[in-house]
Image (cartoon, rainbow, N blue to C red):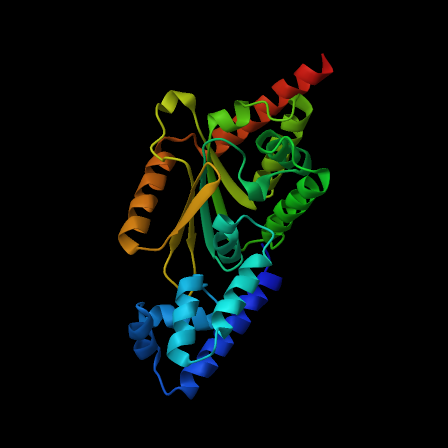
Length: 275
């Protein structure tokens, strides 16, 4: 996701927080102690790097005597996001990350999804959703993909389970288009992709996982299961996620072998719909 409307909203939130904190004569550490978080987190909120949960925003209002201002801003910015509530903060942080590492056990990562594939995924999960809503979700997903418009930033790497490329999502034509889209990005050296083959045995990562690093903030991990997700920033927990991801990479196919497999399976799909 590019730094757009949602990012601007959090930057404004942060600038207001800094202004009200300084007017109250409090340091970041002092405000942090009063709202039960660290001073460094206050700094990240003020810089727009992290977003507070509404309950913390409510505590800001109580300590800074701002009559619900921060809670209202928080809920307004969250409500303006086109993403599911559980993914809103992760989508925002994607636009700030310098590296993103993803593990995909079921579907192609959202940033890599071509329009027809994205449509098939949404229809599979929400078969009775109105067409306007489906189109809005596809548009939001394609907007996220603009993160790859920059030639080098962020550094983006994915490990995809072989099931992702073998599962016939949307039909052979859709799958061929999708796999060739990924292969094109790999050949442009814009992304790195490795396939975790069935022969590797049981995956060492449970569910979808994204690990993001930043220039001026600690890394975070985002883990997702069925229609729910959680952003993880506890250092020990993030470290365990990194270790699990590294183990998955270690047993995945090499980048060159993965690219060959992607293109080979794409041709298999081509033969299916041309037969």
